[in-house]
Image (cartoon, rainbow, N blue to C red; front, side, top):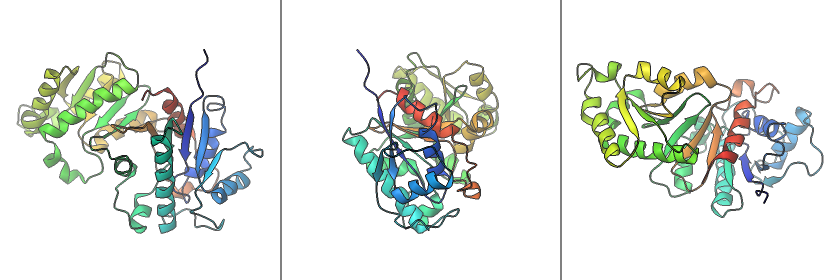
Length: 317
């Protein structure tokens, strides 16, 4: 029996950024053609402008579009954060989530949005992740980053580095390890090897360089092991990524944003994918921002968006 073709909602992100360009280029690429049924969530005027400006090969009826109607004038501002872009970004995401929750689509893929645009528009979410959690009434969630060679999950997300040590608690690390196991299940990793990174150099060196490992991280790892989670650590951060890259671990639990994102972007800048674990829907996103400096110039690389769509098709609910 043939499997049903998955229907994937693809938001165009901030209209002023590269989101509309990479979204359209991705769904029209050979890598996505025939893989799923993409549905663009955005504004008709923005989509038509992308197609016309970059001479994309689109015939009438080729693109399935849910027209939100937030942007109505083709002269909308491009290449910088605006209140209009922030409002439109939220409207696209809200509609895509509604479609996913009522099972009209199988997954949501979100193009980049701007935190500054959100702020200008009067929204307080620091990013996609927290917005999606609120729209789906989700309490326990985490950001996961995926590439062929490296996969990781974050204990803390969008916060100043100075705030991180106080946020590394036994309970927070434990909950993230549990979500790491769920992430592996969603990815189809049946016997996961989960590793936990330390916060400090040498993973604290028995308390000499910091006590977070001794007081919070190691106890959380043991708590998770008592629950049957296949996890080990904490390991020194300067060696754990190399070991995972060589295939020793399936997923790393990282203490803060840049601890994980720097090595991942070093090896998979154009093909890294972000997804949110804990949501009642599948949601993936390219691992890059709005790139206002190159927006609407026709040079944006859709590789990460293509990978985000491909991963959304492969993921399990």
